[in-house]
Image 1 (cartoon, protein in one colour):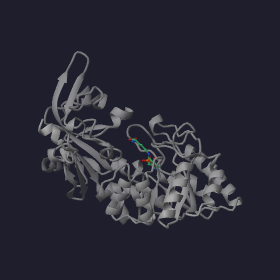
Image 2 (cartoon, helix red, strand yellow):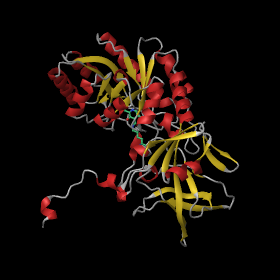
Image 3 (cartoon, rainbow, N blue to C red):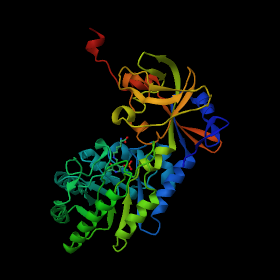
Image 4 (cartoon, rainbow, N blue to C red):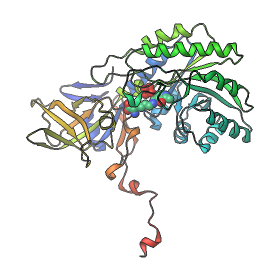
Length: 420
Ligand code: LLP
């Protein structure tokens, strides 16, 4: 369920015509529906009602301050993977005691920053990281709460680039080696063992792999308890998929139903790190048609948004539905929707049956709220686009469009080049 809908052939974001927003902010821009964000957060969080849990929004999927602030207000924490994300989270008013920090390559200064911010837990991904963290915590006279991110070796049955819990992936510590690492961790002076964590992949459309992972993790929890290393948190990561096209992913309720009973006997707090399932269908990317052209092979619709604004189609060949902002009823055609970037990989949709768009028409790239803006770049020196949140009959700028000045901020020409 999302809050982009048609009234008399006109697409609305909640109660505002998308075309009205386009007129005010220009194109391209990301548009997020407040009601959908709230509804999706509550659907996920509420699904685990009755079980002790913490929903830590995975902010790599969308790190806009306004969106983080919204989830903070709903009781959410965040999953971070960098010092930059920690900075954003704190700026947005996220409670540090609701922050978990994952990632295979945490830098020393980021570990220090996180320790001084008193975050809840580090999800440690290697034995070297564990040692480094212990050392740094020691010099700071702190104790670092940790989980070991284990790799449970389950196949999430998703795109290989976004599957993370297979033995061949770079993430976490092999679950078979985990008990040994926990014993080491328990003996370290500046480490407090708090939990076990895993994240097996993203855009999962079945509960089976989650269930397999939880079964393996519960086994580990039992082992740890026997070894006298009881843990209080079980962090299951993110990964629940959404409908982009024909996918039929489980509702958070089904996911919760399958997991809750497996952990009910233990005295633990569950942590989740959902990203896509909360923001994915809450956002669209609105673009304007610049030109249309046809070759002997193909029809092309050239729009003003490109792969730098939304990388997913180019990077993963991902499907995003393309919908008109105003239905004109001028028929359909098969076309590629492409951007202005000088690469053949710059497309938003390929061989797609779409409306017969004309220059000046607006179109919406659907399901773009997750890993859309957050993965965007300024390639081809294209300023990053504006972000807007619509709520009822009002809309709010939540990120200004970048300017050309922003593009060169921080760049310097050394004197020898200026005076040469
Ligand atoms: N926790 C950890 C440790 C993660 O690595 C991720 C995603 C999540 C949570 C959130 O997963 P989600 O609930 O969103 O599935 N750029 C790709 C997705 C990469 C996901 C990386 N990790 C895409 O556009 O599909």
